[in-house]
Length: 87
Image (tube, rainbow, N blue to C red):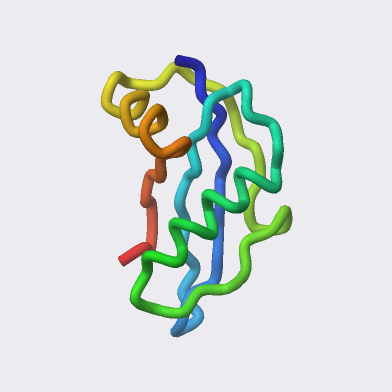
């Protein structure tokens, strides 16, 4: 499966910046849906976070997904890769 990678930076409590990628099928181009996935992920956090919008989340590139990521996307519609300050 080809996936789109959306590079995302959101402020969290304590002024740290969370950095994570939202992975979705390459055929999904609806930014509103992609932001909804990002907000769904943010709602799982035990700390407060800033809003997610086009200012914080930008399309980065398309790549081939690994089988485990494909499985997660097929189940949930998206996959998150946590990079910095996500926990």
